[in-house]
Image (cartoon, rainbow, N blue to C red; front, side, top):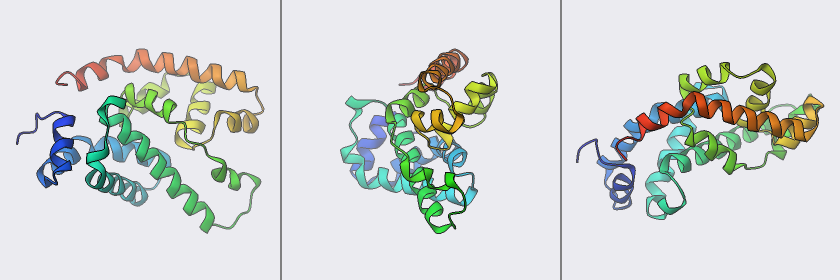
Length: 193
């Protein structure tokens, strides 16, 4: 097997318990998944654990991955995000509860559709940071709170004391700007699909 196999071929082989296929998939996505997890958990060991758990799930559930519902990377980012937020919740429950904000992790909701938008734009690692730096300060704050801290749009509105419509508008404008900034990476990364 060579490393030009597409994601679907690799998943079919992983479903048959082909460890070489898992190794190729790991090599292909480990950096981007680790970077994404690290942006959420802010800890290298925790990001490594999240990444390992993701690839364990790929190994165990490859036969259940449905390519009709989107790209593999979209699914991997959504699972990574959920695993990272679960890690934050567990870590939060082990820490003393000193502030009113510390309970907010318990109110995190899954916004897979928004996560998929980010994934579709290939926002990972240095590319994400560079693109985010091009946003206004208000847009950066909203995107950071939603995508990296795990807050819902309503929670961001409450915490920042701004209307929910303003939060939604900032997310929408930020996504448009990020799409423009990152469009060429998506074409290059998926040219072989």
